[in-house]
Image (cartoon, rainbow, N blue to C red; front, side, top):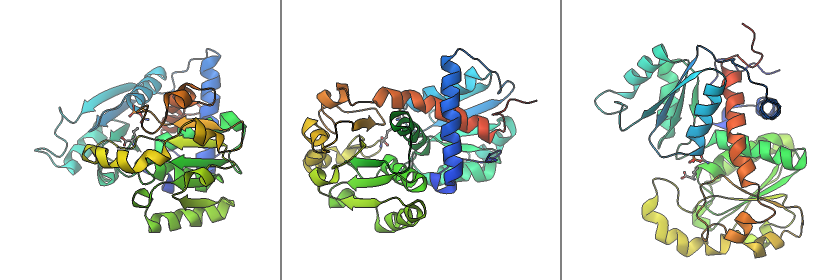
Length: 318
Ligand code: CP
Ligand code: NVA
């Protein structure tokens, strides 16, 4: 069993295959426990600071309910209200929070902010989305693939749309590390950077996974077990929205693209929130292949697993 006590999750790059699979396994167990009506209070007396620079529904709700269900006390700190980087520098805020809280969740713009919070607070910091990565989302996505197909290694996930956003980056790492074939299908200007792809290819080589980057959707999706998309315009990039609509039309996940997989069992995944009519049609979103609400629910179970493991509380012993 991997020992994750005291660890932050800033990027899945920092986690081994064994550690990622352990968190997915634990999350599946936690989901089953909850469905069976078992309630535990393994985080009684623990506190979580939740810092948000950007909006959130799922991530906020997942951290808050997961921590609270285990008896812990989550505290929501909007950057409209606290001194983060305004009047007080980040290192000082981090050191204060580290004295008061057992762990910190951060959602915001710069990856550097999450890294600095971890460096100066001295407690586990969980990246709840930055411009660069969304690692807790990828954990839930891997869990959902496990639920759908019973395995990770050898499955094929095709991501269509903005291939260089936080969700695409974290999925690429998560798939490479756990042995899923990963295809990024995006126009040239929205493909991930070559050095990042090379790094992930190195990880994929260790697990025997394939990592492909292409701009050609119909071929890309052939044989896919899952087709995944995300919004065309991420938070903070609103000025790009018009241009994105112009170049991303061919990458919309519609019934035609789903049929091009040649596989009747392909599932549709989306981190949500979705802009229906842009990256996905209403028919696919609401259709029989869609697993998006399982994915959303799995945010909570994977985040609970992460917090229990990094606080050394998954076995619940005193
Ligand atoms: N998927 C996701 O992170 O959703 P929220 O923005 O609602 O947290
Ligand atoms: N890429 C999206 C993900 C939202 C959960 C964004 O950053 O807005």
